[in-house]
Length: 117
Length: 109
Image 1 (cartoon, rainbow over the protein chains, first blue to last red):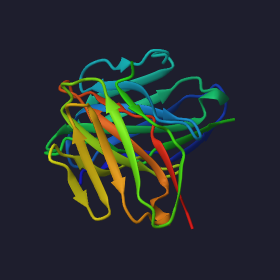
Image 2: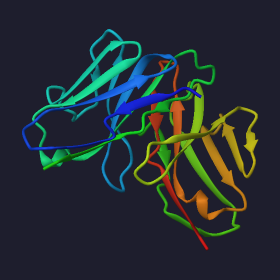
Image 3: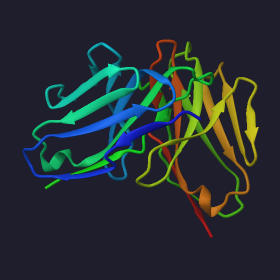
């Protein structure tokens, strides 16, 4: 099946710093990528939807100036958590859909575990 | 009303039991349906797509009922390794995906 790679898998940073997470589709063109956040023992929460070449659409309650999403190419989307605080510590997961997938399912990255000290 | 509703459980069943999960969706124009499995601290992985005629993969059977707008997942002869969270995912015509909250399953020895 298609592969989505997410990097880094784990990151620890100091409060106030910014962290960038990359999501790459390795063998297909991802016209749409989705970013989620998941807190322990809770369900996935969609943060935003990004379409290649256009601005991301953020879900209600998600600060677009804090969570910067860039989807500049068909194979790469990035999520930057700006001025991270301990409450931003979470599991961030991307997923992608796009051309070349006959079954139309979503493919998920491995997730990035962010810890803000 | 949520796009996708799913009983969060938890379901605690003995090994060998049969367990079924249901998921309802609100948009009658939804196109594609999937069951994903998510293990603790891992990303969701596709378990199976759900086809109109129903489909089976080993101990797993998925069904779609468009009239009542629900999908189901049946797991027969539960194994300890089936313990996970099962997510239903619905895709609409606008390439939007909607998730259920996930159903937690624990298979007990």
